[in-house]
Image (cartoon, rainbow, N blue to C red; front, side):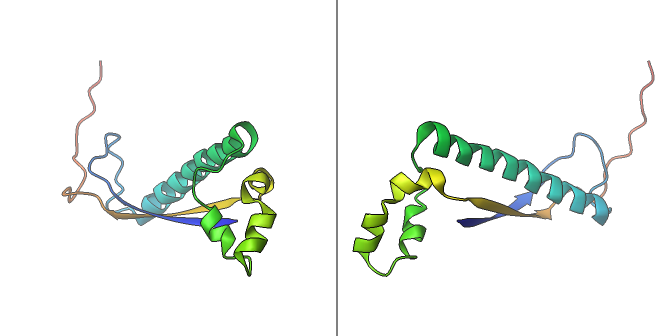
Length: 113
């Protein structure tokens, strides 16, 4: 089963003061990092539902049902019984819409103790 999840973000603040606004390479790195993080967490959740819980809380059965010609065939397949064996691939498509109202990151002097 292939699942594609579009994620659109608006960054309201950057506490690290890294300039993501004008540096497109850093924006790309941030988007890819978020995709990897979300994918790891999602796959961990799927693994938990398949191996520990043994149930499918995502309602993917509706999508799986479309793969069968008749409802009878789908019922015979027994989705809940076969879900723990299903191969699941999740792809997050992260895009950053904007960085709020900040036009340029602030230029703060570093305090030295």
